[in-house]
Length: 88
Image (cartoon, rainbow, N blue to C red):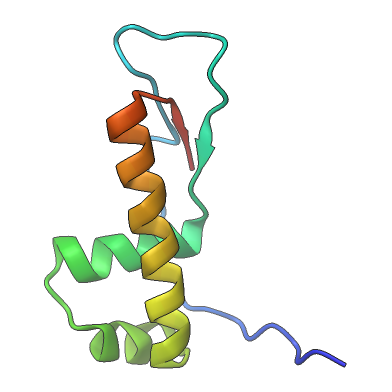
């Protein structure tokens, strides 16, 4: 039986929820970035926190932050390289 999902603290919700490339190709499926992934990117890359500090801030384990951060970075790389739309 899996463990219950732990509540995560998110203090900053994005003001913009959608980004479209200039050459918007309607055929491309958008990449969906979760609010958890957005918050991890904001805290680690924008505010300069370590993964450990981010974990303490979000009230989750460091390994969970590491997993969230890794998936978020892969999604961001995919949208930049492929020019796909982003939804948060």
